[in-house]
Amino acid sequence: MKITDKHAYLIMAHNDPYCFHKLISLLDDKRNDIYVHIDKKSDINLFNDVKVKYSNIYFISNRIDVQWGSYSQIKTELTLLYTAASHRKYARYHLLSGVDLPLKTQNEIHKFFDMYNSKEFVGYAPPRSVKDISFKTEFIHIGLRNYRSNSVVKKIFSHVVHDGFINLQKLIHYRIKHDIEIKKGANWFSITNELVQFILQNEDLIKKTFRYGLCIDEMFVQTLLWNSPFKDRIYSTKDEFEGCMRLIDWNRGDPWIWKDEDLETLIKSNRMFARKFSSKVDRKIIDHLCNYLLGRQ
Image (cartoon, helix red, strand yellow):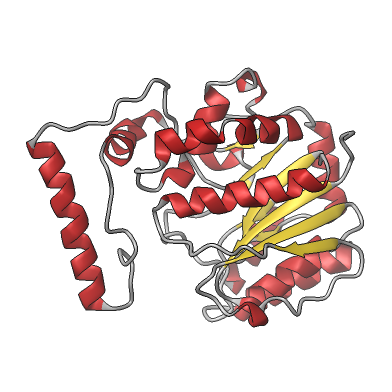
């Protein structure tokens, strides 16, 4: 297959149908195809009634029960990549969550990525993350299913199981050895077809390296890219979120949920996308940003 000029948007959603529908309306363009994975735990009927005029939209039928911090997140991303790449070779693959929004019009987004058509927009965390990487990849992490459960009992039990097994591994000096240098960063990316093909060809290596880790969706693309022939294509390693062209505020929140008073900050940003938004916290900012972009488009 010949590489097209079209972009593939890969969306992982599990809540906030309102924001999801607004996101789709901003991506709806004849130059884009949209691939959506709805968490198996979520009611898909809240999402699949979305209407598009110009894009093709595909919902992943083999839905995955996505669990925080576990390999299921990597599995979901690989499923989206594989599904999109099986349809055609796209110029660019963008991974977004269902509570992300673009900050630029589609004309501006396509123009920007055309300008840097050989660059890989993958975020890299600063070197101080080395200890964090070691903890998350050198131990076997279990008990993650209810690690962030709303049930206090399930959450406590999950933490006891997880932390107890980590302490046992420390006691017997157990560590998983890795043959490649592991890197981490924001898990949202905008990458080329060449890198996508390389990732899919190395699925066995990904599983071998990361299937027992914690929050490894923030590492597998960074690690493969860093240890690949495409390393010199990395757009930036100076700023983690400039590297992936996302506006994410971790100083005010976990991350910060954008509010209506942030509108000027958002529209003046040089980033292509922003997260995170919530219709329950502030629906106005979603509407105002959406109307601003559609008005300019």
